[in-house]
Amino acid sequence: MLEAKSEFTKLSVLDQSGIVVASTDREIVLLEAGQIAEIQDALDKGRVDLVSMDIQMPEKSGMEWLAEIVEKKTAPVVMLTGSGSEEIAVQSIQEGAVGYLPKGNLSKENLRSTIDAALEKWRRMQQGKADQEELERLANFDSLTGLYNRRAILRRLEDQIKHASRYEEELSVIMLDIDHFKKVNDHYGHLAGDDVLEKVGTVVRQVIRDTDRAGCCGGEEFIIILPKTDLPTALYVAERVREAIEAAEMKAPEGDVFTITVS
Image (cartoon, rainbow, N blue to C red; front, side, top):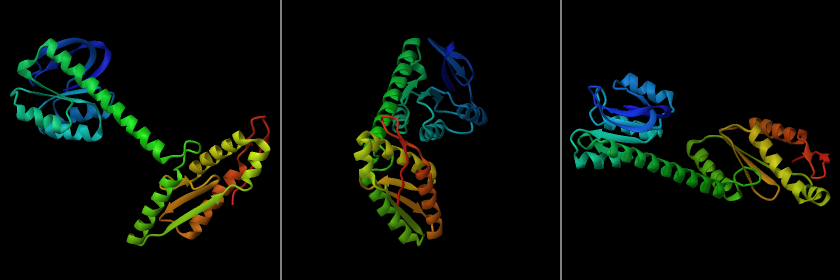
């Protein structure tokens, strides 16, 4: 059984016969699903805030559904069971459920507290994941250009060289340098220089493929890694990058418009 938070109706928990066994005043929309097609359809439609599911399910076990939902990170799962087995409770939590409730303990208070605890635990998990992703982003990406920083891009280059060597695949690397970048800083100021670096990073990301990786190697030096790419194709990509950067308009803080080139 699936529940999606909303502003319309009260939550009801149903057993397999469809009988309401408990309810709360939490206002959500209830989506009841028992067959594989119904459950999959509900999950595919998304906007599910909480899954409350029996261990015993037709066609496919609750644990199998739990594993699938956890893998896809669809929503938090609260497992229900009529047995109240501690072993099942432990297994459910180990497999990724954020809550467990025996049907024998179903009451308005228990249901409310279980759902509140599950949603709060899920919120903390999602926040923790977001914090971890932010830490990884700060550790691997240059804040100005949005490209990989020197340490990260060189590590990825080393990995790509090993991979290409092992599987005998072609690998190309583009190294580019902003021409006369010191003159930009001297003439327009360092804020303009930062804007140039940011714009170059944006242009590079727009031109290269999703499978390519670009990063900062020095103050105004950049590396683009092109997996499974031969030399003629790499030359074509390099020329596209060069032309795109030359065509981009740069603006100084005073409003002056200028262009740059790269080699």
